[in-house]
Image (cartoon, rainbow, N blue to C red; front, side, top):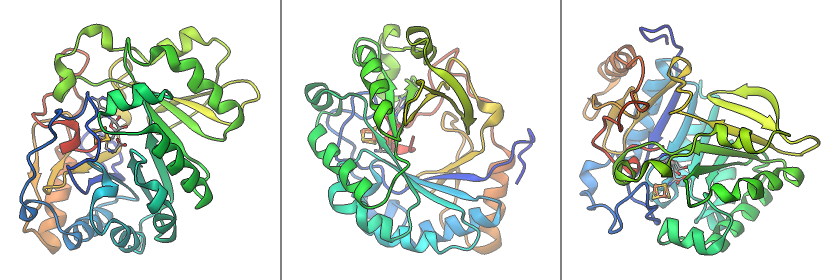
Length: 314
Ligand code: SAM
Ligand code: SF4
């Protein structure tokens, strides 16, 4: 379906939980989130019903996110049900990878097409520090499990943070020489805990190009500008929501784990989908698509959303 700016909206980011087994410093408070009563979170049946209604409104691709989607009870069953929905072309998950050792194969068997794994650093001590609760070794086992299960086009997402991991860009690039992976560098967006961080924490994705002139541009994919080192097996993606905002190409809507439709990650406006069914549900989704904001204002000020990232889904 087209929105009022003429953008085709065909991509749903569906948050299945706001809980997480990590506490990444830029995303969540150190003591986690106040656990909402179960009744405030969409049931598996509601998640399927909302997905079905979004597909009726033109969605072709769904990405499950969170919080950490793999901590949601019933996630494999949910994936199986979503993958069977007629009209859905691609089902993807963005995960921190911690539960992939045990879940990669069941997710593949359930029909999940692709995985993005978030990994901000390749150094175990830094990984433990930025995630507060994570272990790089577990994620590495998760990556092996994902490959063994047949997820062969893995993408890795690293948020660039000045003074934390900007000295590792070269190490990430090296990984693509032998692995057919895409390593994607994402600009830090000022929201939640990191909205108050020093400006020096923000590193433009163009820094990667300035430092590594050997990178050769290849075709873009969605909002990612893409590059390759000569002869490398894998690719590099730059996601620059702040320095090169890509709102005019945005094809996404989002649904939070508590059932709010958001036309933009950074907008305050939300439409409650709970309790709606059939045509009324589709009408509310169409309204959300039509009201999708033209652009965000991250270049001028922090995000307008009062939510932390884990309460929306990145
Ligand atoms: N827990 C899963 C994970 O970490 O992949 C899925 C949810 S997480 C919110 C999705 C992505 O958002 C992660 O890659 C994370 O690094 C990214 N993210 C979180 N806060 C961010 C911020 N302020 N700016 C840029 N990316 C952010
Ligand atoms: Fe959890 Fe993902 Fe947020 Fe890290 S970025 S705290 S893994 S939701």
